[in-house]
Length: 242
Image 1: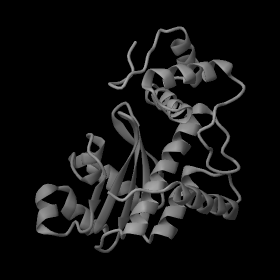
Image 2: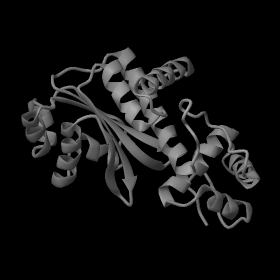
Image 3: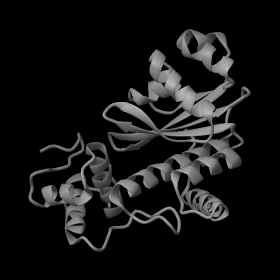
């Protein structure tokens, strides 16, 4: 599987920041999706969030992207549905083939008719917690080449960070925030250290797990941190538990 590097992540983050400057707006998931379309050579991008088991469109670069998401929810099948149900990335170079139409007999023909021939669905996850999904589509058939695929994974990682930053109330006006701790809340620091020890991971990864759990439960980060510090909540490798 192609993976992104730290240098690639930094470069893609710079592209998004440049787009935000061009739009005269803070870095956002909207700027990220628009940058992905421009840099990856795709026709559209859609970012969805998992909310109570129901995907919610957080950003779509055009009406077709939102339509594709709604269509998959309506018929209950499609590449994104496979990912929502716990699968890995779904990279479909051509929806207009017998194999694709056999796999998704309701979705694939309708998607092609609507104007989407290839679709690439990338999960946004922290451990077992699925935060959302970044979907990219093209109006013509074709794979993402290796550099574009690596860039798309970097876009997905940065989309995950932006969603978690929004939930945690972190400021991203100057760029995609790094996984740093909000210094105004010492309890979050303490909880992050406890999660790091419980999971045997670094502080940045522990903070990501803490933010992802707060996101999944729609709970203020400070409240979850207080529960961890009070030992009412604990994280382990099989999932967080009370």
